Image 1 (spheres, rainbow over the protein chains, first blue to last red):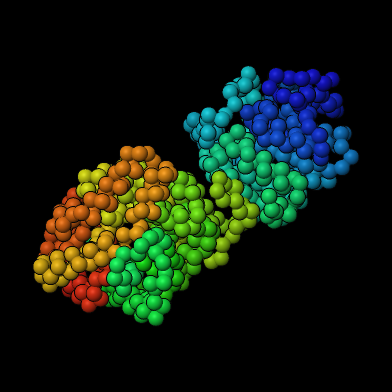
Image 2: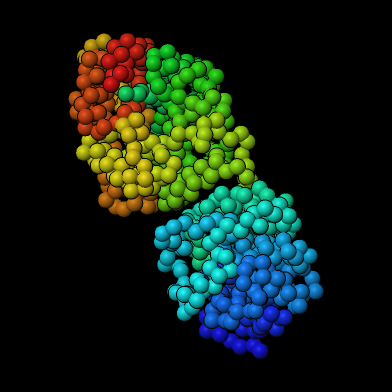
Length: 252
Length: 377
């Protein structure tokens, strides 16, 4: 099944039948495949995703329970979600693919890279969650530039509940103990104005992973893809295209 | 109170103002230049013997006004020539420079001096944006980003990349990192409300502020209060020791002698050294948004003109200069402290072509008669 959806531009909604249930994803663009894992805010077509579709065939997966989708039997934690993503990649691609995740999606992407190293080529983690407890009280703002933020989607409460049900907002000790086993060449991004993910977390990832680049995005908050889409797109596009050589300047 | 001895390293040999800016360097005699550098470095080192807390210098370009195109070079010499005194680099003109080079050179100075660096992050004066071909309208935004990048380079334990508006560096890890932890003390300008608010927005780094060339005590007080308000709103409560006020200073045995020396030196400073700068400054200020709005542009223009036109007595009254016998200067400093609440006084004693023996005598009088009184207050 494939269908256009409001807010998704040229991306089409598709379904993948997996052993645990039907997985919704949005596909757009053409080129080297990229599997994208959304934040706790739920799936949406950000300017970054739209820009990446110019060079990549983007598959933006919807974690079961988000955006009004049904849950999968037996998939009730981050480990289960990683199995789901692994099954999707294995079923659809014959080569390792690049995987990118934002916040909650970054946490899930690390889990996928650990569990299925043979399926993941480049890994991009934007303000990855998974290594911190939620602080008590009202959460700090997501966006440093609220004027660029997307409006609230229709599934906010359900998305928040789904995030919590997968263990969101808690420290993933299992992952924290195994960070150094993530083999994929990784780019970690954090906004200099991110109030949700402390810099200590990304430093820890940078120090542990054997092939990791950490880049601070000046002026960006937690919602990097809306706060600073141009910078994120430039960095991620360059990293996915040139790999470790993305640190070498090229003439414009 | 603490005291900073500041030096501009002026060229003393002009007989008439340069006809244009930049000043033609045919008037620079390298042999005399070598002698002046030797003399000025000796004087800056002598500040330690005189009990100053800081010995300080800054950066200027393309002008006989100051011979420190790179004040970090002077700082490196002072790190070797002194033992205890803080080295105030007040400061590098950060928007004109490669911020990572600033981070590295400041870190070197801090390590070489055993943690004695006070690191200034300044925007500079308008015409210097012509010198280094940087759009003046970007100066504030460049200073903000560069400051964040430098602080990150000093404190980040892992290699990192920086994706900014003006600066992009894919992989950074400076060696050495600073001696002072988490980083050297930083000082920002707060000469007007706009820059005071800017300085306060860096509260997370607990900056000092510096204000020099005061023309109006009320405006200076407002700027200090603005800095404090913005800092407090961001969780930082600045103390008197976090506020530096800078003056041209002439201390002599008598009030009359000090005034006479000051009058001649100020005439050379404003009438000769600064003369060719005014046109270039006016061009930048009028043709760009160097200052935030037209009112601010006008205020700054008026401010500089006002200082040039005033008599010695008026300059003392306005807080622009310290001038007189030790007793008079103590009174002047106390009055200003009462008005502004600052804890660090910076003195520029080599004003223009002020004779070196007058400078030295002033430093000795400071050591023997002013510091014993005010140092304990």
